[in-house]
Structures are given as structure tokens and as C-alpha cells.
Length: 121
Image (cartoon, rainbow, N blue to C red):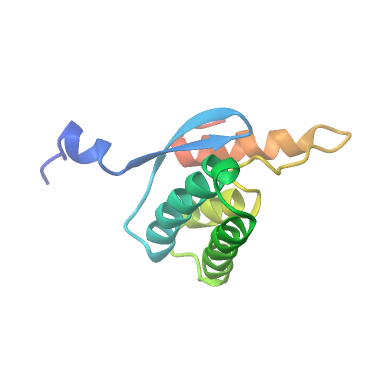
């Protein structure tokens, strides 16, 4: 079996913000990974263009974003990474991930990051 080239591998990586940390995420070619890329584009547009949009256009952008989120969260996961992608979408790319008094919320994000990156604890 031939090893994939660095370029081929790099094409399969996405940058994901996990609680302010940057992770390189390997995506299998799944339905959820495709929807996640679509969600990232919509999220970037809605959050990056908020000040320039009219209220009606912003509401439309957010409505589209929520529709993609609903599809991602209702789609059956095909891989463990898909489950982690669902966590990122559910928490708005880690931005809405609230830590609890014991600090385990950020521990869960760190654990998800380790799993995505394929690192042992």
C-alpha cells in the first residue's frame, strides 16, 4: 500500500478552534465532514459579516446556519471524528463550551482534541 503524499494528507486536514486552541483535524470522507465544512463557511460568513448585514440578512444567515447545525446533529456518525465534529457544532466551534466549577469542561475539549489528533493521553 503506497503512503499518501504530504499534499494529499494536508488536503484532508481542517483547522478547528477548540476552546481557543488550534487543532489539526483529520476527516474521513463522511457526510458529516462535508456538512461541517459547509457549516464552517456559513459560520465564518455569519460571524464575520454581522456588522455589515441588515437585521433581515443577518437573521437569514443565522437561520441557514441553524439549519445546517440541525442536519449535522441529526445525521448518524460514521466515525469517532464525526461525533467530535458534532460536539464542535453543538458548542459553536468550541466558543459556547462552558466550563463547570470542577474544570472538567475544558478537560473534555482537551480529550476531544487528543482523540482527533490521534494522540495518546
